[in-house]
Length: 245
Image (cartoon, rainbow, N blue to C red; front, side, top):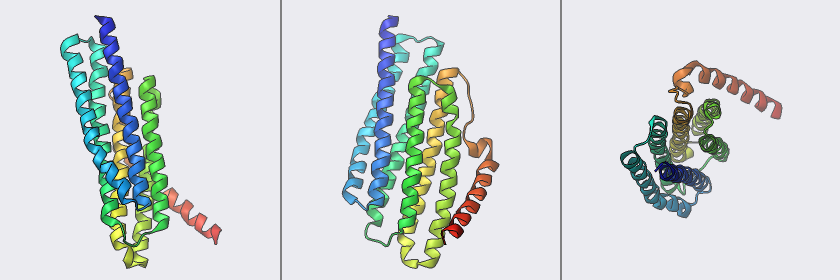
């Protein structure tokens, strides 16, 4: 009986990781479509959302079946609950990717700001790297690696604040970018929220691996840190601009 349970739990782990990798690819596709003004690619992301929702439902059903039929011990129960909670965050990340794809369709044809789009691409890379690191920590059941993701989230928050300022400055100098700018604000906010959901994933990984309930979101555990790094980043940007002139 135990061997059967372990086999089913392994399948559940595999389904969760596969879902995570799929959603990471959705983030990439949606932001790439946005930056490249690719309406067709954006629609593909939107169309794929139904499959993502179906994957979460299948995973949830499988997890609940393990609990109901296999009578897991306390440690197993903790792992299954963590997967259920974390899969909900993955699904929300997928929803945010779809929202970004919808912005691509809405803003297509309006004046754009290349500098901001380049910064959004960089922010996307940071977010995807976070998600892939979270999945790696999950596979390895590495609580320490999961805890370190809080540092990555600080970088994402910092990028959000800096890009927000760039968008505001661009609108003030060129009102033709107002429509595009509203979408830029939306996209960077969605990326920032994705970072928060990845931190939630990390918290569930820690709980699954070590049985610890932790608060890893820097905005909650150390709100002054983000403001401090943001101020330092502004100074660095101004110094860089001076040196480039």
